[in-house]
Each structure stands twice: as C-alpha cells, then as structure tokens.
Length: 284
Image 1 (spheres, rainbow, N blue to C red):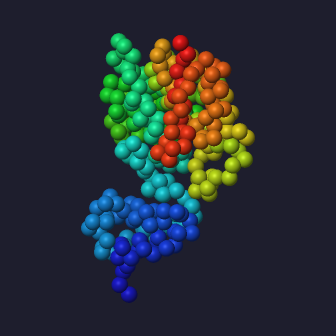
Image 2: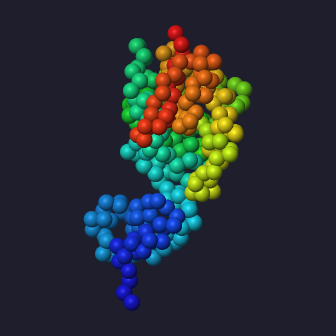
Image 3: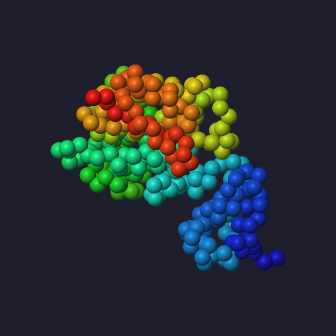
C-alpha cells in the first residue's frame, strides 16, 4: 500500500479531530506544517502530494486528547510576532491585542523621550514585547511570580531581539513592597490578570492544560483586580495610563474598583464587540 500523501493525511486527521475541535481542518494543517518543518502556506502551495511524515500521527494523537495546538507546536503568533509558549504560560489570544493597540495609541508625555512600561503577570511576555517592538524608544519590565513563565518570557525577549530593553523580574502584586525594586513609576502599565470565576467550566483544552494560577480569581473572578487596581495610582507616572484586560461581564465591577482608587476608566471592546479592556488614568 503506498504511503499517504500530506493531503490525504490532513483530510483523515481533520475527520478524526472533529470530535475534539471546532477548527479541526486548521488544526490538522498547522500540525502537518509543524511536522514538515515548513510554514502552513508553503505546505499548502507545494507539499500536499509529498509523503506524510511519520511524526504527524503522534501530533494528531495529542490534539485528540484536547492538548492545545500551540502547546504541541510550541509557538503562537500574537500581534504578528512569533512567541514560544508552553504549559507554564497562557496561550496569547487575539482578543488581547486590543491592549497592545491601545498602548500604541497613547501619546507620549511632553518632554519624555523614553517611555517606561510595566507588564503585570507577563506570562509569555506577549503584551510587553509586542508593545516594545512597536515603540522603539521604550523600555519595560515584565513581572511574574512563576519561574516557568519568567523563563519563557526571557527566552522570547532574546529570540525577538528585545532583551536589551525588556527586563523580566520576579514579583507578586499580593506581596507588600513588590514594586519597589522595579524602579517605577511607569508611563504605561499593562495587565492581564487572572479573571475567570472558579465556578465556571472552561473548555477542556484550557482547563486541563493552561496554568490554573493564571486563570482563576475567586468565585466572582475579581480577586486579583481588588488587589492590583488600587495600586495603579502608585505605579503610574503623572499622565500615565494603565490598560487592564477584563472578562466580558466584569467592566462595571472593575471600573468601580478603579473609581474607589481615584481612577477614571474608559472601556475598549475586542473584535467581537465584547468588553475586553479598561483604560485607567488618574483623576485630575
């Protein structure tokens, strides 16, 4: 029996993965391109009649057990940039790109040539590094309490040529004095803290594989906002802005936490028109 071609193997894999994924065909194509060691576009253009590589079946097996494609390949694109990812960090989502877009739209303060950025809960470093890559004069600090996450973020900073402008540091906003070694205040503060309610049932590919400490924040999903948001006025330089990701049902609650701390807020929506981020600034 002749070997299956790449195209045949993709078709069979997509049929199998329909029970696991809403994007079964795409998953199969991405995994095949990874097995071939080429881009998906190059595979679709020129490799579909090649013999299917032996390693492809094992990748499909892993996806069939709900493991995220990004963890299988070890990479995820975010804001047009490639990021290494693994089970130590959340997979960067396209919805979070609204934080980067908003950060790039913030005008520099008068007389400030080098903007300073703080990324709270940096994970893979996606938010911080995407902002720094698009603000050539900026420098930043990405903090995380997880050693595994800090290792991934530092590796991404090196791979993207940003290690000279991005410092990855250990810090936990629940600990007194956590920000003192960071050298603030900051012109931009980015944060995608845990905000999932512990009562919510997530998709198995998320709940069983992504780090729970970066997902869950109490019964209301507000525990980390209640700790971090009141500290933002201290972290922000005069005229600075904090951009904080939220769950789509949390805008009113998180804005109220900010108001109690002396912050005004503006809501930003994602591409699906869902509430996604609050832009905080100090009330003049």
